[in-house]
Image (cartoon, rainbow, N blue to C red; front, side):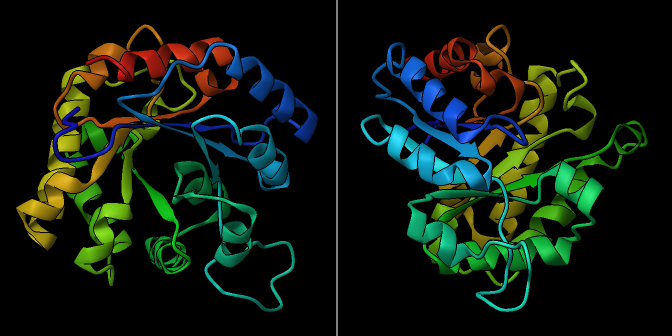
Length: 257
């Protein structure tokens, strides 16, 4: 982490878990144990049907509400989709874009991810842009090139003045939901390469300002080591974000001086 230049952000990604009732219960439990988040920002990204309940339940805590997905058109005949303006109007601050599960199960391409990034920024919210490699890509030695392409594609058309609102989440696909975790050195290497890619596009000053998270099975027992890396500015947390005590443990790891 490098708080001199950029935010440290711990964000939970609930995926398709918890009802609105369970969202309120989670918030009540979290409130009893959440520390004063002096050194990091906290975000909870919930299913779209839970957003209103989450905004209300977390309103007295320093917790921003995020969405897990968005559609890039402003309105129209797109049954079942949710626009950026709809999310913004509910009080959403962050939107996850391009998660590996969206790419794998719902066919999201780099072009679609880019359109969503631009829509989120236009609505005044912050995209959490997910990039990452498969086990095959890592083993064949193309991790850096693959992720650089994802970053460049996602940021196409994004002006330098809006880059501070962008968050990049490195999520090694081979470490999501598998129990495997990238070593601190592996996470640091890829996050450093992501910052180098941003530097090549926008210059050093902008690159220093962008928060880069690690998003592959960060847990209470490995969070401190991962967050100690200079280019790892937080985490996009999956399973551990569903349990208040584990989520708080990771927040505490990020909240150290």
